[in-house]
Length: 170
Image (cartoon, rainbow, N blue to C red):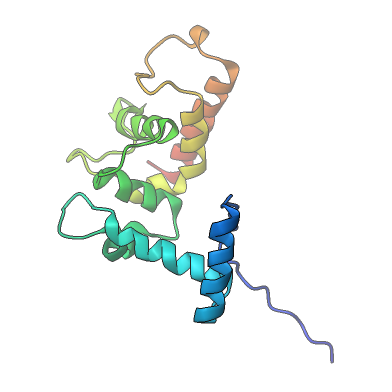
């Protein structure tokens, strides 16, 4: 009987960094001394460095708050980031935040409750479309201008987002 291979889910990302020859040499020595691979040694060093990064509440550092900041869902990570803003948002994150805070559907904010809380399930359901739409917007966009000043890409992305919201049943 033939064996079937189970697919292993990759839970790591590959990054490339440039380091000096001296740093690489010292890294090799450190790895030999600690009996760790370069990847494992660097990962542990990076994790240790997070203890020097302060969070919004100032009682914890990024290392101790790491479990709070991490979620498998990118939408949840983003919502935690903007709810606990200590970090400067990147321009593309500003545009996503603008969509979440200002996008109207049937005269109401599509992604916020009446108590100004985010609708996590809807945001997660529409995450790809939110990102796609945000890419076509300006961070100060109010989404109220006539369609003729927007690009076809903007209009299509907006229509796709509205379809996804309707599909969800909002």
